[in-house]
Amino acid sequence: MAKGLFRSGMIVSCMTMISRILGLVRDAVVANLLGAGAAADVFLFANRIPNFLRRLFAEGAFAQAFVPVLSEIKEQQGDDKVKLFVANAAGTLGCIVLIVTLIGVIASPVIAALFGTGWFIDWWQGGPDGAKFELASALLKLTFPYLFFVSLVALSGALMNVYNRFAVAAFTPVLLNVSIISCAILLHDKFSVGAYSLAIGVFVGGLVQLLFQLPFLLRAKMLVWPKWGWKDENVKKVRKLMLPALFGVSISQINLLLDTVIASMLMTGSIAWLYYSDRLIEFPLGLFGIGIATVILPALSKLHSSDNKNDFQHTLDWGVRFVIFLGLPAMVGLMITSPLIISVLFDHGAFEHSEIDHVSAVSFGVVAYSVGLVSFMLIKVLAPGFYARQDTKTPVRIGIITLVLNMVFNIILAPFIGYLGLALATSLSASCNAYLLYRQLKKDQVYSFSAFSSKFTIKCVFGAIVMGVCIGFVSTQFTWKEWVFYDQVLLLFGLLLLAGAIYFLVLFLLGIRLNTIKSVATTESN
Image (cartoon, rainbow, N blue to C red; front, side, top):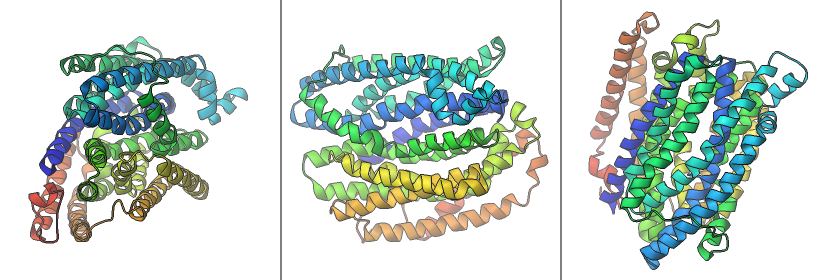
């Protein structure tokens, strides 16, 4: 069990790393073509709306409701019942999402006005930002169909994960990044506004991801013809679990969307600065937090079905320990090296040729988001502790509290520090979310942070601090802002290697070994 989880987690993390690296390349292309001005604001806005809904209908709420039910059917009823359930789920989900997608395409001006309120008001009053509203309405018609494709991709990926074929689902997002990059390069000169080429890339990427999954489903003998199954007993169970999860599991995305609404009322560039900051945070979050969460949910669902409470506790504790082990150095490293990373990735083309210092603006945003990085990761691991037990109501209650806190923090901080207030509010509310999830799990006697994990965390904190002090000192010895791109890249890789070496050396000296990381049922004797 322990080795299987660790191995599966590493597979997902490796595949995710490829996707995240290409994601950063994609963002570098966007920054190069659009910079961090009006066109970038609008494209990122048009891309965020369907991605927000993707978290609801796809790998967010749907996956958290679908996987426990699917695991239960697989363990108790066999593959034939699984096929019937998948057919009903695919047909029902597909029809609902198709209707939502069509509404989104047709009503794109209404959606643009609802979530880009500042632009709409300016358009209504004939102001200079009115063009942003018109462009957002047009781009949404191209990006919204992505929701339909990726929802079916998420269903397929969840099915493959339950059958322990994690690599396929983890690799699939790579194709989206390849599509966006390709369309940006090939079609950019075909439009007066380059953002159209990127929006087409989103559409193509969704379709390509879906087509890529089909042969693997066929090989697994799980490629079934979808059919409407609204009244199917198991689909009803998914619906019941999914409705509250629609809000609970995607609370961070709702927060980001509300941030977008507020940011549309701030100075031009605010949405882009938040986006690029968030993208750097998403790299370690996707690599470690989501990677572990992906493999831990099927494992926890199986343990719950077999009523194995002791292993459930150990597995959840291992997941928490693992994200702390990797999340703490990632948080410290991003805070210190973010200006160099941003300069290497984005400070080219339209991003570079601007009167505004975009590098500093984005790096400050990274620091604000980094405050909550470990909390973002912990949420991804703690939430499955509820969903595996088919409890979706508790995360909803906690999510509502978190959402209110986020808006309170926004109101307090945004007037004073602008977009940085929005980023910091998201981090603070995420920390509250993680704490409330843990407190409830402990209260339910489902999971309690072990004594061994407490000692392990202290060692990780010490290692991250030593690492941060060392690379912070080394980085100040170079005037890298005056260097050419190639030399900056070499310095960045050198700092990352040094950071990793120092962190792991400190942990080794403190007695932490590889078996300590891999083992699920760790005891004090370890």
